Image (cartoon, rainbow, N blue to C red; front, side, top):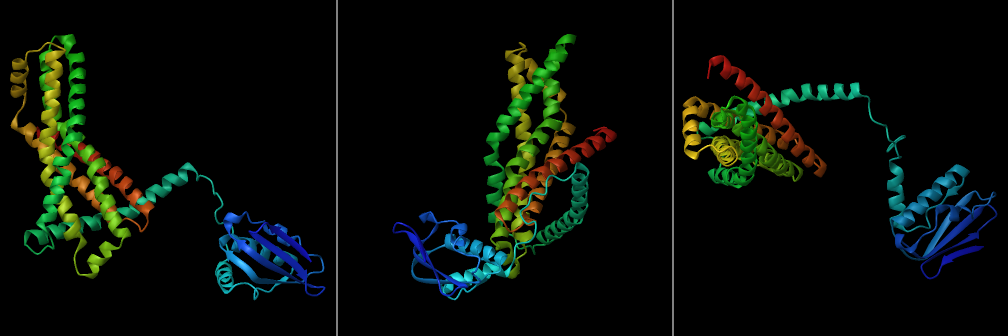
Length: 380
């Protein structure tokens, strides 16, 4: 007989029942916070003649997963030595959990680091995922078009209160960040233009450069990128969280279309607010250019204002507004698409938000390129 203990916390006693059978008696508290022994300490009691192992737990006061881990490791040692283990002396809860742990054996190689795949393999995987995702994007676009049709004929499951709330979120609350970014962009345009125009003594044309650049391109582009990072990611996170909580499944069960009820208000809010945000961003950029031109390059305020008014035409406003509207549609589409495609975990919500921003910026870039080419060919 051999006894091992650690004060009043835990102890075990090994005793031979027969020449071939050993019984280990557990006593005290066998919890993780009690600095439990390793399984090898118990396995050391197994002599060469032992072929059967039993247990006694009459004096066992408490146990947790630490006790289970020790027993699991001990059972593996016994299996390697060909020793039969009798679990009947263990508590019923311990026997049940050990049976559950043994029901599904660990897969060979599970958890093993497979290393980073080759670059060509990564490129191929991304390409395959893209072509697999393209039908899903087209299907979602078709559902949006059908939902818009239902809205126009008054049959959509749509609440205008949700639309007003979304307008407030994507419009007025975005003015701060749009103001800061577009002011700095207008400042940069003014400095770049002045550096080149100064060589020809034509610094007054800073007004033309800043006004046309902000109104036609940079105002809409920067606003679209800002809204993609701010609002597109929020749309994906909101809808993704609803996927995790099975709220979207509940809508479907109740016969409510998630596209009508959740996606359409967000899409319309951005379509309505993006032209206004684009005009506001362009105005802030023009003010920044005026500030730099009048304070740094000593151009009169009235002269700068007159040149700005002369440079701007109606077509520049229309081009900027059209681009801003398209960019807003791209952001709303990407954010809602990734949110509706989100998985059922917290990690999936983060991935959906990231993917929404990347997809939105990609769509904005493609749209900007196509629209610029079209407007150039049309002479607009």
